[in-house]
Amino acid sequence: MRLPFSKEPMSAATLPVPTDQDRTDPLLQALRTAGVTAFEQDAELRYSWISNPPWDKPAAWFIGRSDLEMAERPEEGEALAAIKRRVMATGTPERQTVTLHVGGEPLHYELDLRPRRDAAGTIVGISGAALDVTRHRRAAEALDHSRAELTQALERRELLLRELNHRIKNSLQLISSMLRLQAGQAGDELARDQLDRACQRVSAVAEIHARLYMTEEIGILDFADYLDALCGRVPALAHGNPRLSVTVKADHGDLDVDRAIPLGIIANELVSNAALHGFKGLDGGTIEVSFVREPGRCRLLIADDGLGIIPDKGSERLGLKLVDALTMQLGATLTIRQCRPGTGRPGLCSEVTVPVSKPVKPGV
Image (cartoon, rainbow, N blue to C red; front, side):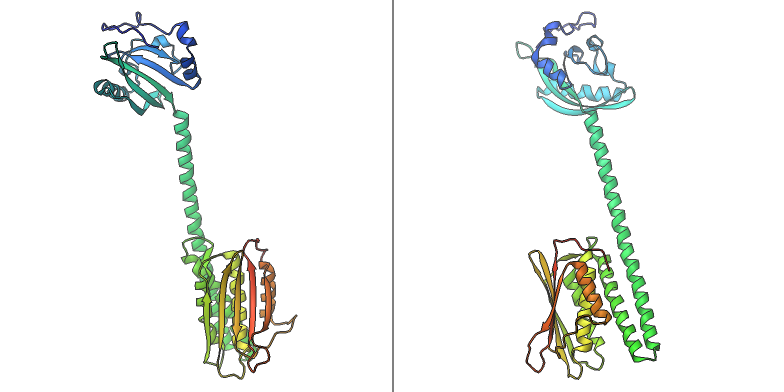
């Protein structure tokens, strides 16, 4: 719908307002349903026609007025008028988003502005459409704010968890040091060995928390790196057998802390048992530690070339009780067999297969 253009300025009293035909126009009805305000302005950027007027104002209130006259804040009215003057000067349509304060509240509009021409092709004003996107803008701003708060909360949580792992590691190292001092003062050899084993167990858990503190992703660590660090201390347990060596061959990759801690303790116990009990009376030997990742599971294998003494089921040794309990916690399977039965040094192979798809049971 177009209005006849007059070069003479039109007053609010003489400018036309929407007719009944305008109100029944299908396009205008569609625009009103969509919440769009359609309008035309003359060469002086005074409103000559408007459909679906905003701000609870009647159409007649806009007719004959300019944006400068209607704007609560002069700078906003001038900015809007400058956009429209540019469209008239260049003859190029523009789409802009503007902000106008109404009743002290900022309202946001998306504008589609086009030059209006007469029959001779001369630009005689502006025709446009305005969509109030205030609710969408506020919803987007609220969403951005929520996202920022969530990001900050996650960063705080990450910082707290790192600090927690750091403090746990320090506390466990302190406990390990006290156990080591106590072992040094123990007069009984059995008590001293038991305190040394307790110290080794505490150190194994402390090493996990030390690595969790340094990892980029909270609750995840590279188990291969952990095994390297863990097994590097094992030969010290083999008293009087300095020629004992430990080799590690492990697939790199992340393992969640719920599996890493129990599996790390299991590895510590099995490797320590091999070092302490598998080579008595022998001149050196080798312990091979493997960690293999497979679809849906991972396998930990500890193999040695020692005496190959298979522990009795139901053994009262604390280390084996820990291994059995933690294997159940992981939903894993444990097999222990001789590597080379019938030979002089049959060795012992201990294999733990851990499913990575099942949830881990509560701790022991």
